[in-house]
Length: 206
Image (tube, rainbow, N blue to C red; front, side, top):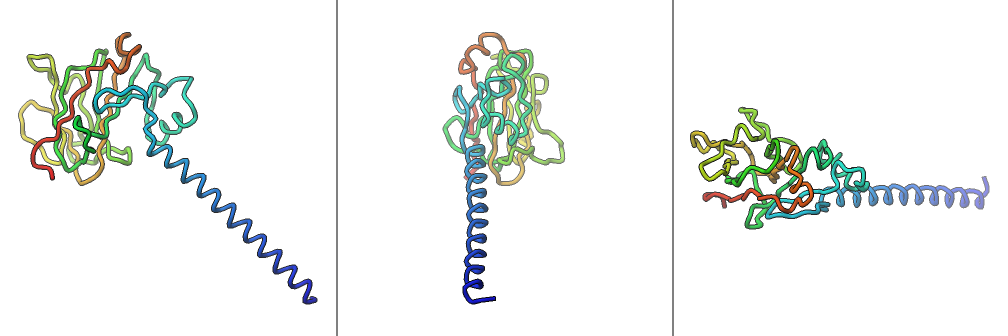
């Protein structure tokens, strides 16, 4: 092989390798930016206290990013007439929720046929716990004389008789999801009219 041919061959390989590297970098950048959008953008419309509701989840009008967020979050989203979803990642004072802390969640039950409140880690998975207790609902959260429910979340059982406890072991990010099944028409029409449960951090968490 002549020196000229060898030089051209080296240039050809260099160009090919460069193109492959560019394709890999572009793909990684595209996937990375899409993942950040899905995981960090809130994508939620109505806001009430610390709670956010995605008004398009489960709707035929949902955009591709909304559909992708639902898939990434493992959320089986029904339409608004069947179920509404509210998510909180901060307490009522705006502080990020942490599993090592204990919280009191309280308020009037949502105006709906049924409701449930579930604790998730920051990766959208349930907290593993020996009690296999992952959520409370309209039956397991008794209502007091003022018509309000109350529950405690935290890494250790508060030992309060009759008060539901959601175990959140470890030191991780924490999210609450409030599912409202067959909400009343007024709530469907105005999701921000929800009488939002308060999320209060209890003493003893640095």
